Image (cartoon, rainbow, N blue to C red; front, side, top):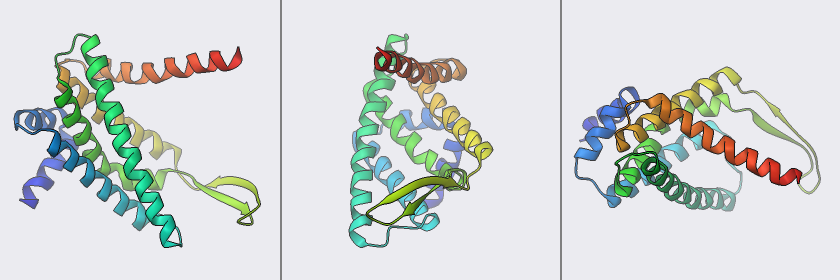
Length: 194
């Protein structure tokens, strides 16, 4: 069972459309989507805990994980809703249940990128005391690797959305995924300047 799961997970990374197609044909539902979401969180948290200096007090770790879980569930519902509604508005044929499965699967498959993301991200360095912080600077990280991880994430996500809605072009989907937040940012920037 574990070997099959690992094989499927690797397929999800190497052939995402075929993987999502297999997932959607498997008769899975909301329960399985929630299980994938939970497993993705646990794997991501394990990678983060092993690769990043964890907070020193136990309460900090618990609060971090509880807020992470709540945040991941909220992102899941927002993303799957957007995948469904925007995809339908663009002529796609996917259902909300399919969007939820694809969103959860993307979250799980993209945990394979977590170690690279941890390496790529600059780490904040806080100067000063615990009560009086004087400056925050960033050190380390790798902008090229960060770009590669971001592009891989975009490709995986675009593949999942394209498969859910039956779109032929992953690149068209990727363009829409980039354009929507860009337009929202421009709108808010315009409102902020008014």
